[in-house]
Image 1 (spheres, rainbow, N blue to C red):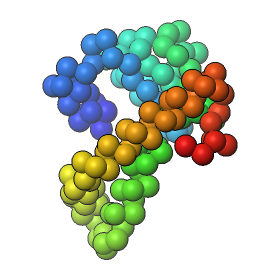
Image 2 (image 1 turned 45 degrees about the horizontal axis):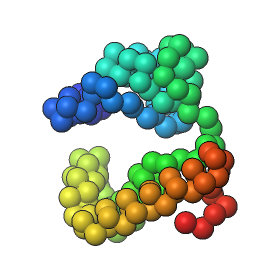
Image 3 (image 1 turned 90 degrees about the horizontal axis):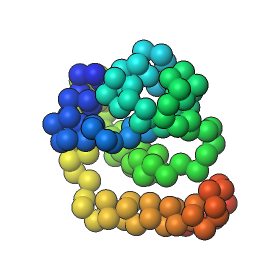
Image 4 (image 1 turned 90 degrees about the vertical axis):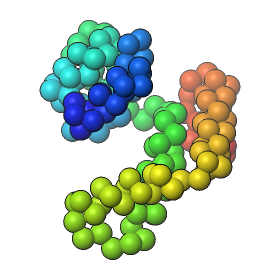
Length: 137
């Protein structure tokens, strides 16, 4: 998916050169093969657990760090709830439903997500980089 879809799409939007890639901590996302591919397109500009130790650049993403990714705080749960309201019979149906549900997210919802992101970012700054999970944002 990274090689065939994400990277070509990011290149088409001029979002590779000079941009950083933030990788989550899931074990399948942290393989040497994945890191080599990312390093080819985002050399030294990867934030990911184990990346720095394998490639000597970028930035480690420590486990349990305050996650500022709006997708992790909102989008995945929102989409899961919306997608599984309907019966999914196949991988193709799942893919089509994910695309349909992504297209149907209201603009107002995205505005709320960005507002929440801004509040979490401010909380991390206020807490000097410490965890913010205990704070109600």
